[in-house]
Length: 116
Image 1 (tube, helix red, strand yellow):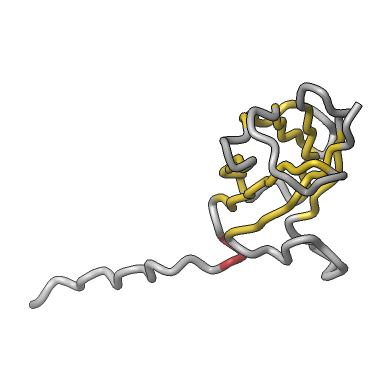
Image 2: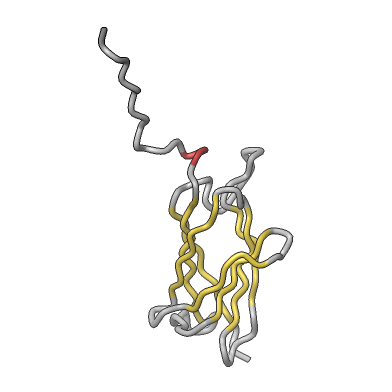
């Protein structure tokens, strides 16, 4: 009698079962559209409790790996010489309404800061 071999699980995750999603935040000047390096970017849960923080690189970009349990996050951005800016980012909307990324594995957003 041959032992039953377990069926290998698919290596391609179902989008509804992703463990995490990636958010790329690009920080730019609202007046010149130039990227801002060294900006402090915090990712907060919807209730504004702390999740992650990072600093934009020399091309104004910071990457976050976000747990898929977080359907909405607040992107909070500060840079020297600029007024802070923050906004709610909707990764997906369970009711099927409008969202910023529609549950994709990799998402992007841009934060524009006004000079002080």
